[in-house]
Amino acid sequence: MMLMKIIATCFGIGYLQKGAGTVAALFCCVAWYVFNLAELNVYWQMLQVALLFVLGTISANRVEAEWGHDSNRVVIDEWMGMAVALFLVPFSWLNIISAFVLFRFFDIVKPLFIRKAEAFPGGWGVMSDDLLAGIYSNLILHLLIKSHLF
Picture 1: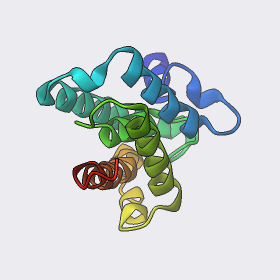
Picture 2: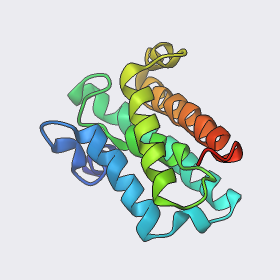
Picture 3: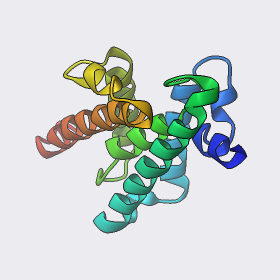
């Protein structure tokens, strides 16, 4: 169970009193920069997102009995959603900051069926709303980049 808590909280970020989801998304951005993940090919980026989704779903299911559904301590969903928002986005600080702002907007406001995805049972609901928030953020960012607005 300890390993599931470590995964669910992204090595303890989830234990922060306030803003743990924002901090987890921010740490994902920092990791994206430090480890130069934007340079990974599409398959490695897909593998990373898939692994985060699977680990997040499993760990959220396991800690739900003790912490309740979608506990604010579970932040691997924000990390995964942020990774989706950054998926195949060319590296630049403007792109990373824009992805962060877009993802946090969609994650907090939950428009366009995101709130419905949150209602899925167990870890599926915990991870699915952030997956959608990341997809919407990524699509908008790619449209902005392709239209040369960025």
